[in-house]
Length: 168
Image 1 (tube, rainbow, N blue to C red):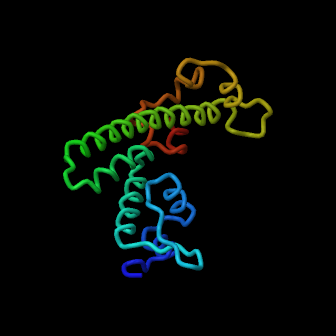
Image 2 (image 1 turned 90 degrees about the horizontal axis):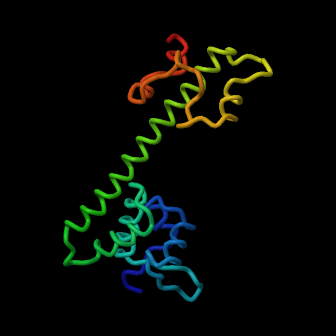
Image 3 (image 1 turned 60 degrees about the vertical axis):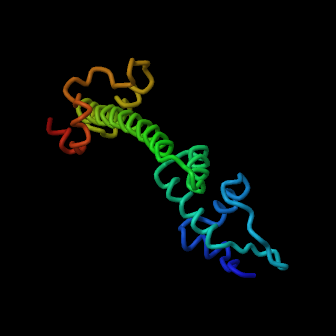
């Protein structure tokens, strides 16, 4: 079998992609079904390794499966237009930036929750917990109620540790 010398284990090792994931990619058509030997073992070609490497890198960058499918088609298309690839990458970058903004807001809210606990009850063994109370009350934006001493601008929140917030 010329060029069919890569087992699924070798593919997994060389791409750092788990065996079940490789099988999943085959099942959904991202990776073509390999040739099988008489014993049922899968044997892949170098071109399959390159394709799996490409797929893995796309997933490492967080591209969803459908975008990976589009990128893989473009990867294999000799007449591909770079502008299409750029548009997909830009759309994904925009989504990542939006999620990062959401995470920064979440970080600021969580820091405020912890600070409200430190201010109100010092996180001690008391039965009354400010965080539990705040989480049980509907508040616009999800921020803790009445923690003006602890409110940190979203941009600055990531620069503070819990210890630094206690000093504020």
